[in-house]
Amino acid sequence: MIRRFLPGILLACVLLALALTTIGCHGLGETAHERSDDHSRQLRLNGSMMIDDIDAIFQQDRPSRLTEYTVR
Image (cartoon, rainbow, N blue to C red; front, side):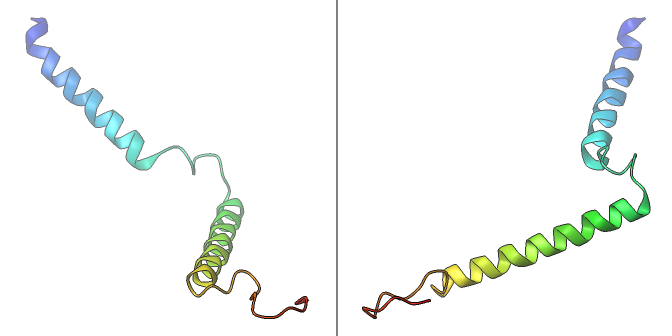
């Protein structure tokens, strides 16, 4: 009897675990304003990190050492 229901129960557990990892619990207790603040913060941080990466690629993240005078 239990062998008949075991594959169904295992399949339900796997689908539930997949749904929880895909959807997550992040937005359940937030208002629209809080969610909007999160998105704007993420966009701002991603933009600043992208600018930092571009500066590092073009070596603009530190002052040039070509002069003997202090660069301010």
